[in-house]
Length: 272
Length: 272
DNA sequence: AAGTGGTCTAGACCACTGG
DNA sequence: CAGTGGTCTAGACCACTTA
Image 1 (cartoon, rainbow over the protein chains, first blue to last red):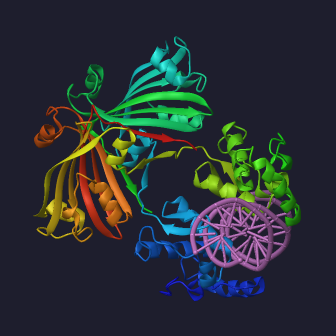
Image 2 (cartoon, rainbow over the protein chains, first blue to last red):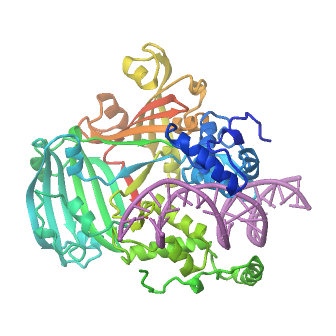
């Protein structure tokens, strides 16, 4: 039922579990002298979690296999059920296990792996690489919304919107053409910002806390104007991201970010 | 200190908190008759979490503002501290708040928003759209690894690797050209699988639980062979994803997935 | 009926921060 | 020092599943 490979019994817990707070106090004072040498005492729930993770990784419970019940782990580690439960709950959030009430806990097949794609500020990204960033502002004005833009910003056609068209350079090489429409209700001072000093992304995240975002990524040829601004040929492939952000139920902005394919790479990583 | 907008006091909890289990039992039996009509009773921790989330969204605590302490919410909702703590902890994991021990809980600026990009199985994706999927197998054999492939799979140059080249069609339109190398140690039977019936992605996830993945996404022109296989022109933009997965410290596979830009779109969404 | 996970509680000890 | 979050416990009730 619970093959005792024996790798995680009570004794293996770093702060050897106690039954009364009295004994814990004693333990703690004993530990305090160790703390200076050992790196991190690690909370019991974290140790149980780590134990489960390690054995999952080693294949002790192959995908779909039934794992020990909370009660079994309580007995094995000598901790309370809430502690074991927390370890399990966090593993579930991480997608490593599936739990079914009344049945048991199972090792996940890890099909639903996902990695995160952050909304990044290009300026910080470039500076982080130790390169120079400079922005070329081609448009920064108020316009009346076209039907498409109005719809995406939740405004009426013809309503006032702010429009900026900025080309970002990394060490004088054009890296991104940012065509952006902003809802004036969310950022009334948008046009007074000096975008050679800060980026729209950065500024908007400051004034309008982000609550929702949608994006799409595709590969396509740039428009004639974009090609000219980026200094590339009309048929060169570009990585195009269209992003729409919403703050407190109010659409903030829609942006079309065009990157020369030869100069931009989106990277990601997943680790459990 | 805790402006009583009063939107979430004890009485607003759906299963009106009690002090003894006796009274809870009574409550529960009363509730059981309501359950048929009301949709979801919602656990107290979830209600507290929802309450906080709602007020964060409404801007009651602007980014950086100090939020109520656990003790205050305990008093306000009449629940135990562990319950409030769980609500806070989950909001922290979601990135909506920052907590500092000894200081307090603060509304996050929501800068570090991220969305998830899942590893998807193309077959399921196509079928989910109600379309027909069919795979055309062009290569499926053992080869000796080139230096580049060997390095990414953790093998020696010249070692045996499995190589498949498959073109996936959605309703007879080529959608993806999948060029994949597989580590035989992880999937010894790989070449015996009928890939007109299942996809490499699906099969590999079955035999080798995923423990780590790295990917990059870029826009570029296809190779001459890819263009031919996909039925597109040499200069048409493609969305190219290169993915490497690792299972239990052993590299499993590296794949180059090429999609005609005009037929493929990567989408994502973030919601708190 | 027995076993499982889902959840709540009341109280506790701790480490950390700030005045 | 008081206040904050981080965590653990022992026991409890519940809903659910399986036999």
